[in-house]
Image 1 (cartoon, one colour):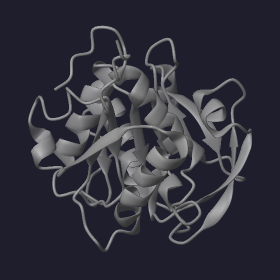
Image 2 (cartoon, helix red, strand yellow):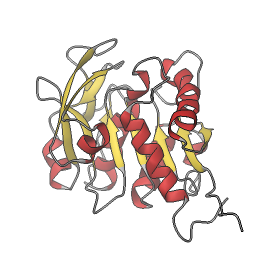
Image 3 (cartoon, rainbow, N blue to C red):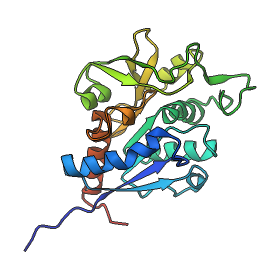
Image 4 (cartoon, helix red, strand yellow):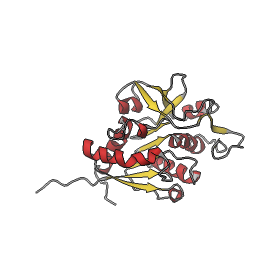
Length: 247
């Protein structure tokens, strides 16, 4: 009797898809490369942020990737997708805007900082968790150093990496201590010591990682970035886990 094949891993791509966002145009290339080079079977579904507001929008997926492209049409939808992935232990990656909203979700729903805001969405807010960067990172490339023993280091396979950015917002220093005290790990920093990668401990979550840089912009798309490959592998592992039912 032939061996039973594991179903393809279903990955939710949460973003307001646009041909004008370079990272969005890269995703099909990356998925093809993951299948062809890595043998990782993935079924990807784009979920607009407005649709992500639904309670079950991403619950049945094997991975959730909140992509760049902010300001999102629905901040609430982006936050809902991140929260579901975090609470349901679904492998998760947030990049650029996804990183920013990961911090926002954690601050509001874990740390109780319900009044914090994102300057791009609410520029007049009194308490900004995500603020304009003093020096924009649009088109910037820089070195990121990871923490030893972290998920980030394991995913990258190195303690240092050079990454590309396309953003003008990042975490304000005001509440970083509170985020850390409530369990969020800061495991990647740039040459000035600014936070560029966050994650949850692996004893709490199998794969929960967010980067301010955009790994999807690495190279020409034919060789998936190690962080994206790690997410795909986590998704495939979840799809093939005992008791996981195909949708």
